[in-house]
Figure (cartoon, rainbow, N blue to C red):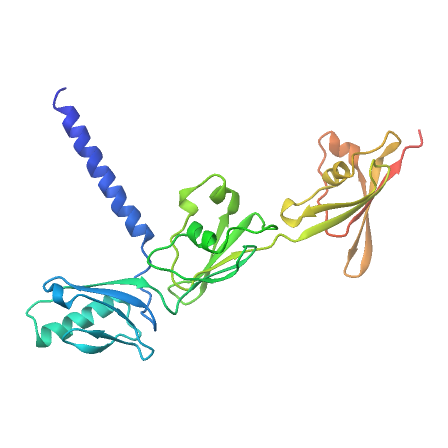
Length: 280
């Protein structure tokens, strides 16, 4: 039993170290993204620290390095640029050159945040950035946001990929799986949750308009409750009038049957509800 404790501590350390590596890999931007103009990159040559440099990709797609001078990296990913610089150094100056490139700042591939945020637009990125950090840089969520936001990015096949994120799960529950590491050119769209106006008339306590948000998917009972509930004179029936393709449609509903377990009716914008009076 005395030998188990040190082994358990060692195993725990190994587990935490592996988890840290996995987290770092998850947070890193894709190495498949080509370098672009005004990208700031950090270049390290492991065999000679004098060749280490921090440089910016010029408008013509070139960088400047000690010994090599101008080097064309246009269209190359960081991994491809590493191999290119390695080949140049080994062909003229060094027997072996292990080159590591890290993108410090993306100059021409900003991340955009649009929709219901305080400051919509592009944000500057330096190194890795997560979804929550991007929303924070955009001033946070603004009034009128809906249930979900979308991360739009270009997939490997060139098509646009949409990742749906539940805002409450991200912001309130703090689900770490939803706090995505972002990539250059990602677009975060926080759709504005447009309002719905329902008109409730007849035997309700406060006849008039009731406001909902579209994401709430309002129902007949919710609208009647929003109008203060039915009066003592209310009957069991309600009529819903709505416009469909320019024509008025009438829906007759026994809302008291809904109260005893029947299926509620989902409402649409500008529906008019009339709660009838009981004659008995």
